[in-house]
Image (cartoon, rainbow, N blue to C red; front, side, top):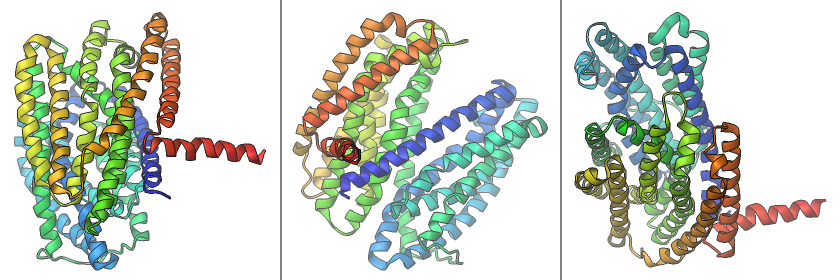
Length: 523
């Protein structure tokens, strides 16, 4: 199978698994809302959980990112047995680091809660501290989960890491359906801890198939442990910079009319569906392949894979951008407008979504290009670029917030994403021999043309059926909007095939046309 075919197959599998997992997560949120509402206990639970997640998500996520190229390097240079030894060493070292962190966080819990829940007093403050301390084993579970995930991804075993959302959601849903009335909100935190360890358990069988067998190894002087720590620090800093962006956006939005923060949050969620399901699947599938090419000093393959991954991202994000810009209003109305979410909330949210969607290509390409830098074990360049993006975002926020209000904050995010990702992509010319941007131009323009034709159909169809799509019947609106999107996808895919867009034409021919011909012959 070709590289494009492998990437397409891996990304498709991960996208499907992630989509199903997100549906489960949606039901989990529904059950939490049903059992505990949106009041005192739920607010306390969220703050207590965030106090642990905020730090460990940043640390464990950084480890996951840097471990893939390190495992690939060890496999290539020393063999798979040495790679398994490094896995055991990392697990053992992180066990003791996590235990130390849990002890530290136990005593600092009141401080963390006073910062994140500065309005909590009396019994609510005490409950938040109690819940936070109950949830401290999350530190150990997340560390192990991300370590196993990095190991499996380096071996191109993607199913288990992408399926971790299933035990995470199922454990909590089962608790909510059976035991929540007995153990209450404290029980939900215990269920969360068990769910995190469920993510570890689901990854152990495929790790065993890849040669994992637990052994006691504890060597802090191992050069790969030192390399892991050296590469992790810039990634953690980059993640922290992203958090600063979010904090600044929310702080500025809090000075605007009521509902600005919520509208930006809901719009970002819609925009992130495509990034979270499809783009993350592509970048995850590409990362270990890039890492192996970099380890083998196969620069031609590195350049080729980067282009193929980028084209797959363009294929998804360019039409999605145009589609969301046109259909922002009906999409927001369909998914959110009910109960306290009125027509004014819909208006504010779809305006934010329109401007967020402009930056989707930039956000997606940043995810892709940072993986290229990480594969060549350069974690500093993306961090410096992230610092530039943060400064640019703040400057644009201040410039655009007065004339455009909350829309200006969304537009600032999009502009900074596009410019920073373009700079990161251009920077590869000096980091990767033989990399050039001109080769991307033709494919990009073909995809843009196909997307524009598709967009013209979507605009015309939406204007013609607006009275139905924006009507009061949820089923009719969903059916008509779904039909428009389906026809638009068919038009777009066929145009990409006719234009011989790299990857799309071959994929369409292999997956659709040839498969259809084989079925006809069988008949």
